[in-house]
Length: 273
Image (cartoon, rainbow, N blue to C red; front, side, top):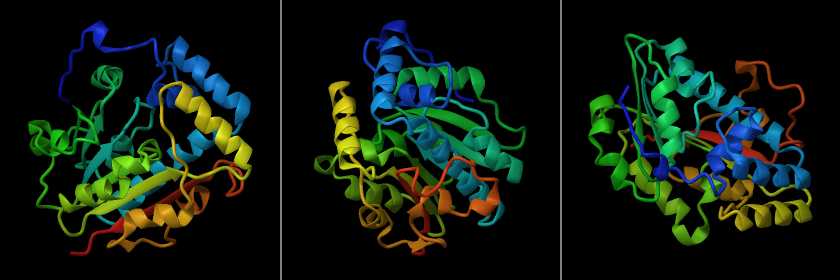
């Protein structure tokens, strides 16, 4: 596990952060007053936010297990990983394949600080964290930590879970994903989850405005818009679906989660050439 040390002034606790709000929705403990205030405002407009977060976490568990156990993937690159919440991606992967290697990427210093203290790989695998920004892919792919852990000449599973709805159109989200996938060897996979507009347009507008007022841009996309991220990839059955419908047999679905309850799409695709 690579060590990271940040000064306290590197962590801005006066403004909410999406990773720490997500941690609050999941019932974690790594958040501050600004994050709680912003998250509670979102919950007041959108009470299903906590279910949404759990459903997203469940997809990460199912897709990671499938990639390790069924697709034979032994290398994982998780960008926008968020705060450690057990079981973490490397724990799911290493339960299926003890030699799995995982690189987590996030740009929030507090994520890296807690990861250094809490994440421990299996003896035969490896897990490391990288402080980098997905909007600057070179900070990821030129980092020694990445190449010390992963062999990019071999297949890698790229996880972009609940990340791209924070990338607005003007920042080129489709071009960004295409560029990330282009760095990976044939046989690699893209696993992706993405927020969708709520059934009630007024709820979507209110939640979007609440995030924006906190300095966070969020964009819900339709199923067809999410499917565009997989252009050029071979989609794994059942394709891009509501998140609870993606291979629910892998683990017991959360009983309160249905396709109508959770505004999330998800899918997995394979790079064939």
